[in-house]
Length: 366
Image (cartoon, rainbow, N blue to C red; front, side):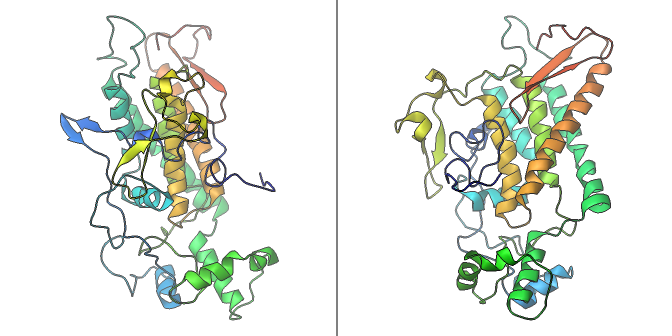
């Protein structure tokens, strides 16, 4: 929805999804150390050098739109910063989701949850999942549900065929400079942002800058594939690891400092300006909220990089959630025993999934 005034802390760069409007904009999952087969990994990322924008030269933009290599900037994804940094802003999120492997960010999240002992059976003494309901099964489902990418691809090509932001920026530039007369809505030409973009552009154009040399992928924009997979993967993890949506994120909430070299305790409005252990707060930030925020980070990161629209994310995430629900229903139907699952959706409502033919009131061990 549109508002007369927008709170930049909680609304401007955040989607209307349960848990994403509280705390730092970056999910806690992206700040937590993990161990992979005993190998310690600190989540400092390879980011692009600051103030590097691409596709603001018209010839450069046109060649990339025609599927050709960037004539001005060859080689790697961008001009990389030599220093590894924690994610500190939207541009860093944009770089992250150009270097991921679709579900790999959620694979990392599963490693965080296991490290924090947030696993399915931790409410029960002397029981752990292994042959069934074990971590390996969860990872299998996490990877398998990423096949959800097929669903947005059908919508992209067979239904919507939305124009990418950088391509739309080219239409705006050509009309604004009097080279073409496209039927674009007059409101965009009355926006002060166009002149700000022209002044910031190294080439004096109205083209929308991107953070990568290659620009957008060559398939349509809506719905976003990354958002769809993020919605599906986050839903799988919520079903497995926080079905009651009551688990507080343990310890202190952190965020990166402006340099991205260090983490600091978050002292935003929810914490009344002072570092307080999150799990000691009555209205804490939850694991479910941070998983939702992780999906939001993956989706919005593509917006920050200049290749998607906000609506691509909003509906892509919810499409992924629907895919995950159907997938988990099929998984339950394949089990020999009755089982049920529940989780809190991106809209904040509980969703229940029960094996076909079983009592909906069956109390699952999870």
